[in-house]
Image (tube, rainbow over all chains, first blue to last red; front, side, top):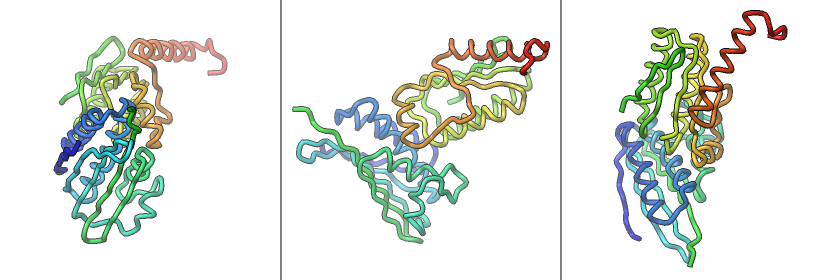
Length: 136
Length: 130
């Protein structure tokens, strides 16, 4: 279970391919089809954020085991302009792009763990995880 | 991947076959709005049964299609939102406020027929509240 997938994000087709790979990985890790959809939707939002704000970046996908939990970890990295106010970017309806302002807060609601590290002028890394209890 | 649009009587039916990029979705919006005029359509059905994810861009585009089509005189109904997709949409905070939805293509057609009937009844003055 130590697969790691790297999906470069440079065009809108990559958003589709990132969420499809995320769904496949989640299926392999035993997530229900509902959870696969949730994970795919979260990946779609953060992948689009990369395109919108940083133009390019990458998403890595991997599965982990933690005690009796299986997890999918999604890391989205870019070297874009960064987020000046992360707390504000996590509020519903806050957008600097004319979008719906649901990308980050929406993805956070979909996942179990959600972490944003951003340095203005340097870039942004979003790490999000979804867990499921392994059935013996 | 271009979405095929069928003309059936006064209605247009766009039947999404596979995952769509943002560009595909925008293209679908332009094509539908253009064809509403070309075919003088009264109704538009967008069948999303094949979509396994709807994110904020997809939802916004569907909402735009419905609002633009209404401005051009056609009613839109979105059909076939899968249960898992609906669940994820609600979690994401995405709504299709002001947009009609129906379970499947059959229900969508029945909805548009009902709307058309009500519209013509209003025109004929049989519905005093209209």
